Image (cartoon, rainbow, N blue to C red; front, side, top):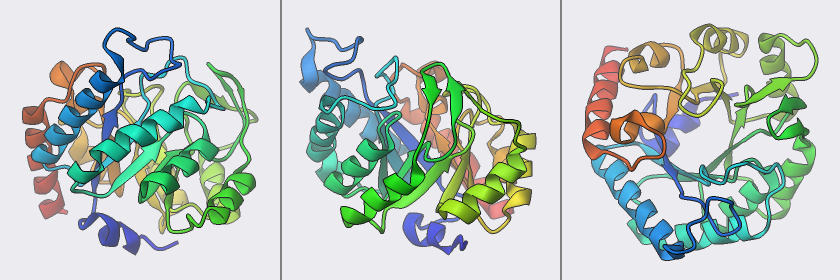
Length: 272
């Protein structure tokens, strides 16, 4: 698989995709009824503006606060996310993607409805997870994508899902190779245990060695102190927690942290 699309889509090599984490939504246990949806939209707007001012290469919207996650979400979740992104659309200046945690079909629906350029999801494998037995059906999802005329949406496959363990004793290199051969992803994502947990460098190396021509992204825990090391292997990174005030996932985005981080990234790109 070619990696040329990375530069074409993001305008740079080794792009940083910044997470715009949405507050809890209607239907979520943590939804703040008193503050309402307008407050959720305002928080997302402020984070979006801070991320873009800080110089990130792309944005990905996710329902990060919809805990505990569902592997088949209720309709209200992608509907509400579509409203939020629709209201923010005029302010988005960089390529953007979406992730409805953790429902691939809903993620594709949302991407088509909002015009997202890429999605991230767990498309393959069967896992024992904190959310129960986690099964997937990649063939169904990709056919759904094509039925909706969304064939140009780039698919980021998370092959090391957070809070989950692959059922069956399979080597990560074999998983990477068979995923690429059987399902034709656009990129593979390698994650730590949870959002904000550092992506294991050895796992990242093994995946990249197994599929050297495939785009491989570090998916969690990339921060100022390790971004040079991570990007020495990965073709890009998805960053959320490192951009938040005090490095705490549920805080608002701190534009000064984003600027410092992206300056470091530019130095790394120049050195490679």
